[in-house]
Image (tube, rainbow, N blue to C red; front, side, top):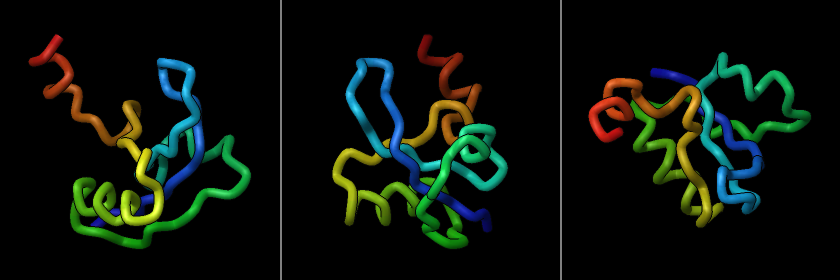
Length: 74
């Protein structure tokens, strides 16, 4: 199980979005007030939980998106 957090950020398209981060992500260090989602079994569970409150929540491309998945679709 991992701890997950939600923080506001700017997506690649310039729109403010809330991103889900895993504990230890570099993006969390620069955030003043991350919202904890607690310890969860998977990043998909974290996404589902975050979207209950924030409909625009997305997974952090730096810590939650698998490199193998990105490489297979690029």
